[in-house]
Image 1 (cartoon, rainbow, N blue to C red):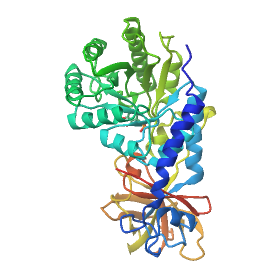
Image 2: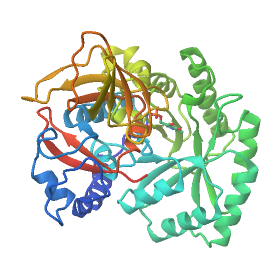
Image 3: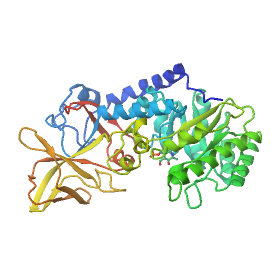
Image 4: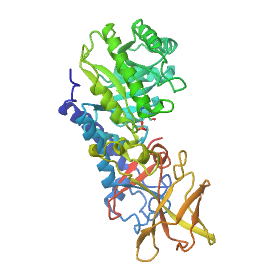
Length: 442
Ligand SMILES: Cc1ncc(COP(=O)(O)O)c(C=O)c1O
């Protein structure tokens, strides 16, 4: 049976609710909380009013360092994965922990996403505060306070759907206890998480352990088993063969659970995997999933694709293996300024660990904007060699011009740790006009 395509009307309703809810983010005042924004705005100016001024990122009073998100590249990436999912019969729940930006969640829903994936209850709370009605919570939740809140949220809103991981009978018992104590009226939907191998992250390690977890769920009156899930990005020493092997285990588990009658009575059976590094293998494995007793909701959860990057994901994107399937574009530039050139081969920029992602690799100098007429040149010969809290250390090759005051545009690796350094991110057109200000909640 084919995966049920999300009904366009339902999808539109989800997108409309989120779009309406995020509109009020435009009413927040521009003030000291948000670094990089212009310092010369009239008191009381809101984020929406500032965006409407359509200032230039480069000459409109923004202060360095400032992170810019390319409008064109962002849209390109949103379309690329929405189209990829549709072409391969996948429902899409982009991982929202990457951006934690409700405005981007709304855009993802407008592009047809089934819902939003999140990692922890706090993130669910942010999403709920911004009108997100369908959430895939790709993690174990055993915190009684969080479960109490989830139960209240579910009981208060019949249109709210959340699906959460379980990976141990002990976790199931804690959830059941907390939900019973909370007087939960609706059952919490859960999927059994299959771990990605020995030494991987969460997730039951064996099929027998998964079955024991499913048995534990069936014995509760507060949980409902709706499928299986896992994360191939945690496969140890991952290569295509190892990832394919693990995905086969995941789909086999869905088939076995179904044959055992564990999904009896469901309208759809959830099978979920997929980040931004192996969505080709996920599409292949989910296409090969045999027909189950109810339609399968084959849920892909890529998150990093939304901004893509200039490092880790540039190397790992499945589009490198399948260029005819599409491409992603690195959408972030961190604009910094040269504040010191104390030695011939050395320069210092005014951005550091507080501003730039550095957990996977150092930023890459890409562009230099001259102080004069705003000419832009390549940053060839400039290399970031280290970061302090508020400085980047730049090696300047012999013969390369670079003056104090010039702006240096950095590309970075790892979207998740770029977004989380910035509470407001300007979205810029190709000519540098700021068209929107994206608010994040970490
Ligand atoms: C469980 C889970 N699903 C999906 C993703 C999204 O993967 P990516 O960041 O490669 O897009 C992650 C990322 O860490 C994850 O932990």
